[in-house]
Length: 121
Image (cartoon, rainbow, N blue to C red; front, top):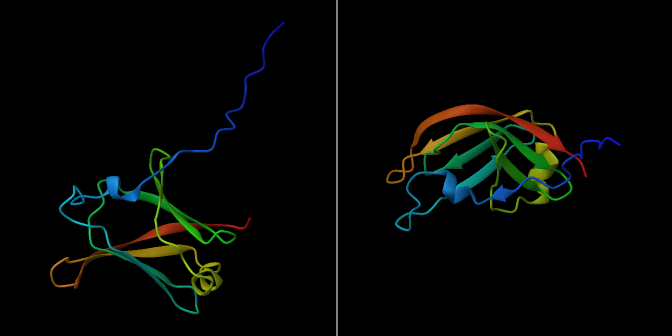
């Protein structure tokens, strides 16, 4: 009798986002804000550089939860609830503009577009 391979049904582990950025070793904090307009253009402002590139974002319209997905498949929860107003406009989005802010001046330092996958549960 041969055994059929078992499909892994365990959910992927979701880690804390602060272990994924520089400068949050107890002396600093991670500040993230998400802004979206009625056309579905989404900007994510953050004050700490990320240790690894983000492959894509996933947003669940049922839970209003935004996850960061790394190249190796690790998932990091954004750690902030997004309101229904944000969800309403994000459902038409396909990417998020990430903008790194200067922690001292608040001015934009750099930005890049990251794909966004929308889930409906």
